[in-house]
Amino acid sequence: MEARRRTISVLMLPWLAHGHISPYLELAKKLTKRNFHIYFCSTPIILNSIKPKISQKYSLSIELVELHLPSLEGLPPQYHSTKGLPPHLMTTLKEALDMSSPNFTKILENLKPDLLLYDFIMPWAPETAQRMNIPAVNFLETSTVMIAFSVHRVRNPSEEFPFPGIFLHDYEKLLFDKALEDGQVKDKFFKCLEKSCNIVLFKTFHELEGKYLDYLSEIFKKKMVPVGPLVQDPIEEMEDGSKEISKWLDRKEQSSTVFVSFGSEYFLTKEEREEVAYGLEISKVNFIWVIRFHEEEKTNLEESLPLKFIDRIGEKGLVVEGWAPQARILRHCSVGGFVSHCGWSSVMESMKFGVPIIGMPMQLDQPLNARLVEDVGVGVEVKRNKSGRFEREEIAKVIREVMVEKNRDVKRKAKEMSENLINRGETEIDEMVNELVNLCGF
Image (cartoon, rainbow, N blue to C red; front, side, top):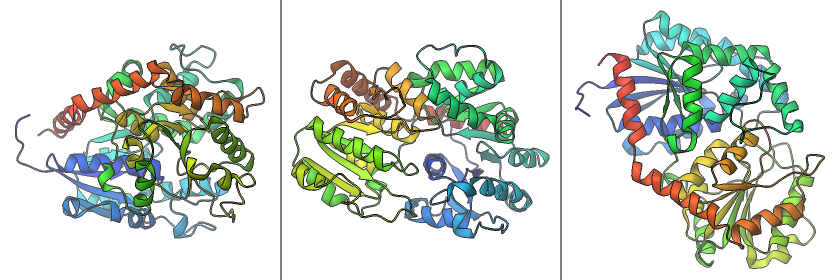
């Protein structure tokens, strides 16, 4: 790629959830290394939470820009983020973001960036940019398969999805269709895709989701551009508690330990916690289990688990409350499997580090991600019973299949996918940069 002297300024506007903020920030870091200046726009509470993640080397090229949401009843500034947000306030938060459009217009007028990168339910952002002749590109950090499945379900509800490996069970369809019934969200989502200038960016890579990128390109007549997995560098992860975890892992044999985590925004019910706990115990496999509780759920870690569970597992397991350095754990040589809710960032991390997935999808895009993981051969899904519940015996069976019986195909495929990503380096980022440079007319 020829050297480009002029710096391109980009204003980024992600949705107000950690699973959206984090990929935008990782993309920002990649772009700064290629002569881009980033204005990262979000609410003050979110910007405060990401300041520690912007090290000295990025401090000049990533500028934080505050977007102030209007004061709405029941939505104080600490709720200007989905983290810790009571579920009944989600609609209010979306309304507040929409109402911040005039403030966003002032930001655009003041900064005059060369380009806007925006998220999935804010069509007013590209509309404002286009009025000011600023090219705007939709960057989606969910799986391409989820977007493709959603588009198909809206446009052809009576037809089967053209990729047989990807499907929803009846109990999952009810929840999925309920989410799609929200006409406002659906319209905003489609508008955001349609208003994207020439291209749409996805956090994925060709080997994993190439056919779904092609499928969407055909429908929207735009180029769907993968930007790679955007996994945070483990070295940049916060240190809190990671030394104790690393020491514990160092004492375990290679590929003998399973990492268990259900993401930052899903909280297991008491029944789910019990089934996972007994499933791990029955499997007799070493494990690190990260447990999170909702802020409103006042509970003691030991009391939340089966009686004397911690005593019985002894050195076999390590239960961590709240947070753990996921990328560091997954890349450790003693970790050989990942019991995951199949949130997209977690899938990307397991692909990067070559760790097979034991899928326990909970909601939203996760069931589709779990089917994709199984379809491409890098994981095995734990099947629910007829009433849609997870059972300890099935959890233990799948853990043992991957960890003890050494499902060689799954291990081999996960390793191949990781090696492929390492060999490709940052090809996707460089190809995307070419697209953005062309779009800006440089």
